[in-house]
Length: 216
Image (cartoon, rainbow, N blue to C red; front, side, top):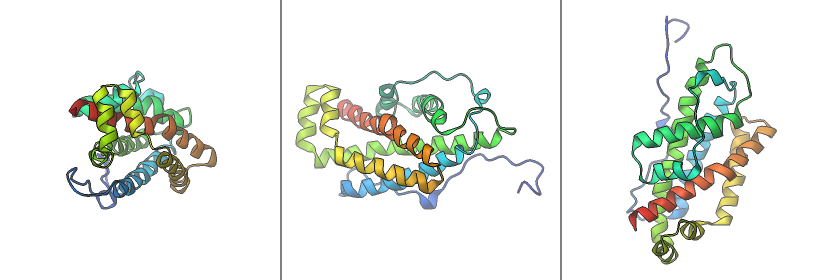
């Protein structure tokens, strides 16, 4: 289109055909099936991150963004509105994600980086929003343990009841494979796995914690 048009602007990319459908929380979809859907979401997210990694950091593009605590971000997705989620997610993306996947410096034409940012943030939002779908199923499959933890009102105890080290190890291994398939270099793959371990998995877990506590 750029070859024949005077001006072309990408307003968004919506890869509907490759997105998993979100199940009704009240359905009988097994937790293992939801985890398979998360794998699809992760594949799309890492492809979006890989596209963004082709461009430099371009710090001048952004109004200064303050770091956001993981708990604040998780609370926004568990109990906040769309505006609060967007604000927290943008701060998280600019301060935690982009510095890990983009090289320092500026591109000659930074517009493509902005387009890539838009897609990456949208993919990240899908990842976190899906956490509320997963916890709906965990309420059924892990009911006794979650109920006991929720009654304490202690986020740490609820989180402990949710931790599944074997599943998280599988997610980290899958992230390594998907990042390599998406085109990240060997060094960058390690940074992606680190992002999962220190940020993405903890936030997803905390979203579920605050969702449980907010509903009693």
